[in-house]
Structures are given as structure tokens and as C-alpha cells.
Image (cartoon, rainbow, N blue to C red; front, side, top):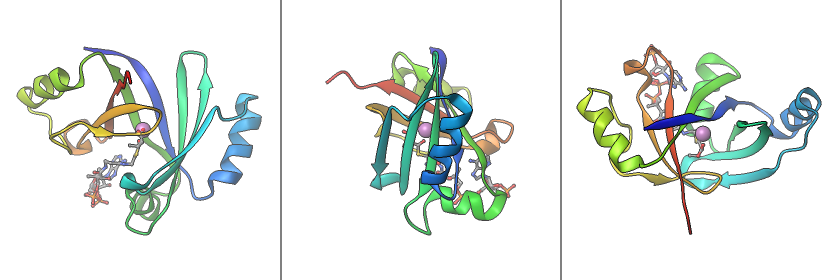
Length: 135
Ligand SMILES: CC[C@H](C(=O)O)C(=O)SCCNC(=O)CCNC(=O)[C@H](O)C(C)(C)COP(=O)(O)OP(=O)(O)OC[C@H]1O[C@@H](n2cnc3c(N)ncnc32)[C@H](O)[C@@H]1OP(=O)(O)O
Ligand SMILES: [Co+2]
């Protein structure tokens, strides 16, 4: 079950400058900055009531963010939904014909297990599923 929009991912060239910009826009400081080497990203998270904004900067030229910005420029990169059980949801979505970009949940940022769906099968929107990791 998808329970809510967990975060909106925004690809940026310079996360320090974008932290300042979104800090002014949201009148807030990021509550977390985190590098996810496995994804080739540096992230910062802002909370906007129940929703979050995730800024993403590439840490390497082959990062998905670098490729995205090269092709499309800065902007909304993905929409992340919170799920109660990521394994169940992945199986349901696979049955429904969506293309999973990872067959096994992987460690994401902000203490989550994540899975991505190919945008080709979701009207051009990269979708991320997130389940909170209860340590
Ligand atoms: C996990 C840490 C953090 C978190 O919240 O926990 C994150 O969110 S990390 C976010 C970065 N990681 C990812 O995005 C992983 C999933 N993404 C991928 O596997 C790739 O980026 C993929 C498969 C979406 C595209 O990779 P590919 O090598 O195929 O790049 P292309 O440029 O050839 O793209 C193919 C095709 O897809 C379109 N595309 C690419 N990215 C996006 C996007 N973000 N939204 C919408 N569409 C996208 C691209 O334009 C190409 O379309 P075409 O019509 O062929 O030009
Ligand atoms: Co994300």
C-alpha cells in the first residue's frame, strides 16, 4: 500500500547553493544532509509539514543525477511514495506490469529501504518506493 508522498527529489548542480535557495523558499534549514555513495548522490532533506524535499547533487559523472542534468537540466527528478511493506508492494507492482529498477530493496537515504520504477512505465515520472527502516 502506498501511504503518502514521502519526498519530491530535485536534481541540482550545486547543492550548497540550492540549500541556500530552498532555505529561503521554505524558510527552513535542511534537517539532514547525507551522501549515498551507492547512488552517486549527495542529498539534503527539508521538511515541509508532512512532505519532504530531497535535493540531489551528483558525486560522479556516471551518477543518475549527472546523466539527468546533462539531458534535462536541473529540476524535479523523482516522486517518492512511502509504503508499509516494500517487498509486498514491489511484488504487486511487478504483477501489474511496472518495471522495477532493482529487484531487491536497497538502502536509500534518510534511513529507508528503496526501490525505483522505470519512468517509461509511469508516464515519464521516475517513481521511488520508500519503507522506513526500524533498526
Ligand atoms: C536512494 C537515495 C535517494 C533516496 O531518496 O533514498 C535517491 O532518491 S537517489 C536518486 C538517484 N537514483 C536513481 O535515480 C536510481 C534510479 N534511476 C535509474 O536507474 C536511472 O536513472 C534510469 C533507469 C531512470 C535512467 O537511466 P539511463 O541510464 O537509462 O539514462 P537515460 O538518460 O538513458 O534514460 C533513459 C530514459 O529515461 C528517461 N529518464 C531518465 N531519468 C529520468 C527521470 N528521473 N525522470 C523521467 N525520465 C527519466 C530519459 O529521459 C530517457 O528517456 P528518452 O525518452 O529515451 O530520452
Ligand atoms: Co529519493
